[in-house]
Length: 119
Image 1 (cartoon, helix red, strand yellow):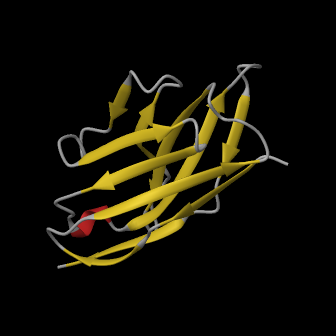
Image 2 (cartoon, rainbow, N blue to C red; image 1 turned 90 degrees about the horizontal axis):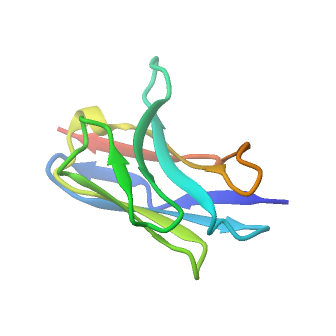
């Protein structure tokens, strides 16, 4: 059973940094596009960042460009999100996502990790 497990969330002051990790298990995710999404209370889930299966292409939401960096280690089946210069509006549950894959239709989600940025 394929599974994604996020970790690294917590409480941090505005201007601080956190590094989220997503550990994949059950299969190799090296051929999947990996991404991070987030959902704040009362809001819809939104895209944060994605990375191609080679790691050579990344994409970011405008709200996090220049502050967040996504990376992946296919040998370890992990994806990371380095978050810097955090703002209170970054407070949300952050979800790891794996999509595409060999079938092109894969759609896996983790359970989420809470990030709270205090002002």
